[in-house]
Length: 147
Image (cartoon, rainbow, N blue to C red; front, side):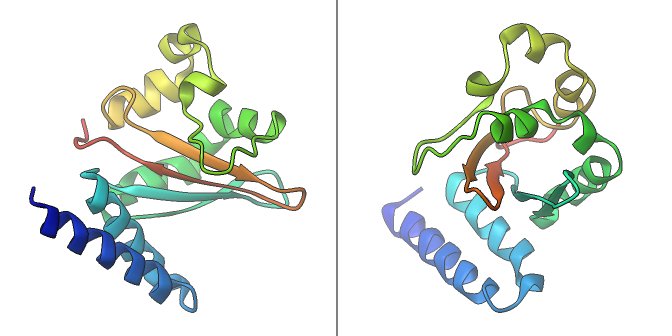
C-alpha cells in the first residue's frame, strides 16, 4: 500500500468521525473507515450502560457479530467487565486481552472459545478502553479475516 493510499484512508476516517458527531447513524461507516486504515475487517465502539450492560455500534462487516454479542455474549465478556473493574485509564496506551485475561482464560472461557474464536481469528480483537467516573467506552478493531 502506498503512502498516498494510507494518507487518503486516514483522512477519510477522520472526516467520517467528524461527520458522525452530529448523526449517530453515521457511526457504522466511520467505524468501517477506521478499520480500513488498519486493514481490519471492522471496528466496534462500546460503552457501558447505566444498567451494567454494554452498548455497541459496529462497522457493517461486523453486524452479525454485533447481533450475537447484544443477544447473549455481553453477559460473558470478561474483558469489558475487567476493564471497568480495574479502572483502566491509559490515555493513548492500548489495553488488550493480555492485560485483562490470563492465557488459560483465553483457552477456556466461553467468550473466547465459543464466540471470539469461532467468529474472528484468534487474538484478533484489540480493545482499547477508556474510563472516567461517569462512563467507560472502548474501541476494538478485528483482524484482517473473519473465520
